[in-house]
Image (cartoon, rainbow, N blue to C red):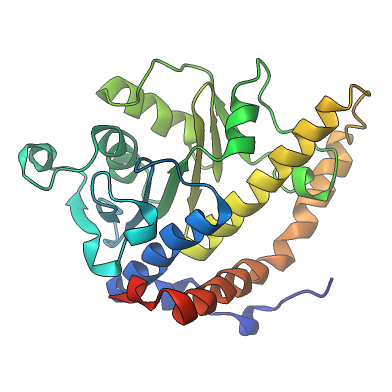
Length: 256
């Protein structure tokens, strides 16, 4: 595997204007369908457009991921609770999670919340921690927060505060009995985190299913392996742009 250098992909600065964010976010919804990460017309992705993170884009209430276009994305102010009173109010659980995170954590520029099958199955275990047993699982060593305070549908202010506080500065939040949330600086980075976390969860669950003892790495080896992933950051941009090219051939309306 060769290292992809910074010059090989568009950096974060090239992805932060609103038009580019809208296209990337709309593409992420379409790609999620192809990956089987979507669930009915629920779940939500968001991306901050203001410097403080409080103004953000998010999918409309109950719009199937396969139909989301760049122009459909709601532009919301995390400090304005009156948006829930309007005709275009977002999903209550989406506002609870994304509104709170964007209001309180400006470093979480992009936030994906989904219930992909393997990550969600992991979240259903009494111990949903990501054990470092291979390259993919070790990628997340020290980078996963776990919330075991499930209180039902995430549509209450207290639930949102707990989720935001537990996420902190981690890129992954395993939400016990619920699903997973992914935070990143850009849409391609969030996509790559979600891609690899779902793969890692699948690997770990299959290892558990074997009934054999897990060969869990030592903390030192897991930390070394996680650090060795950092120079490969450009892979996420190349991977995401590959999927955008596929969409341009078959579903170009995502850019509309």
